[in-house]
Length: 373
Image 1: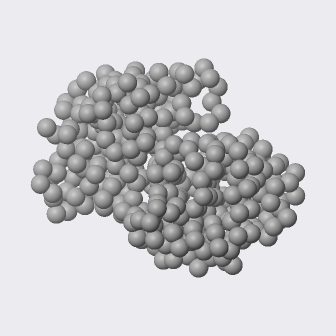
Image 2: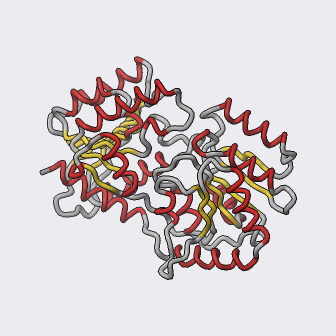
Image 3: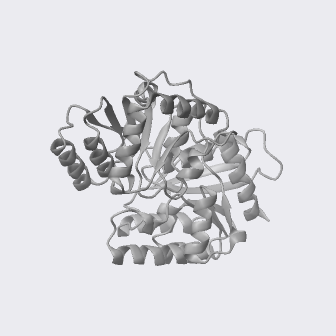
């Protein structure tokens, strides 16, 4: 269990100069395991501090959402050490699989649970495990004073899935940092996928689609951690080899900082073939650079991609888990210059409509104020 220093209050907002205890996954600051959820957690902790909250962060290592005994004991001790009535924000990956630990503490703490993805929505889970995780998550969320989702679609899905009181569910959508326009490569052929190599992100769908358009000029960089599901990574490597794409598809591993910025700068198109996605932060990261997007029409991704004021999308949406549909969309992009101009123009217009992390932090602060009443 690792503790981070309490952040000093900066220009406290009215009513916000309270101490907030935040419980995070142990890998939250691991540069080798970047994820949208980890980025979100760290950015809102910093943002709440800037708004005047005194934020105590505790990272609890463990194989969440189903930890071993040592990690479960660490979480139990961390929560038990907090004073009665303390406001607590806990990442759902840590909280939702262990109601036997969290629910008793929720009775004496003012507990908010931040849900990045419903536990049972992870692709490839055995049905029995998915059902058990769903039950555990339901018990945890029903005991929380507040549930925070990352999109309106995700909030509605949680309410319906678990029978939650809508008055106890709020939304704080991820922000995005301003970024320079990406120059790209030749305007069409450099494809980029930024996502962990896991079944939910659909790299197998991507490789099968790319195999179907191998007659056209393109290269694809897949940036994301390789260690979360080694068996699936080997499956994807096998598809790349079988499709004759070894010199055209690169599994680059996790990229952060300057290497990630360089990957975005060289990209002509972002591709995100997810099977499930409660927000899709890489979509707005691409749009912040004026990069068009091809993504699955699933969950919150249509909301995240959005439309320009004139009603155009800054990219293309395809059915999830459908390599043929994704291949058709990629072929349209690669052979149709007028289409590329239209959606690239829309991507640059959409760029000016995005909100930053300060807005996310204010949304979250407004929700957390409920815990202080």
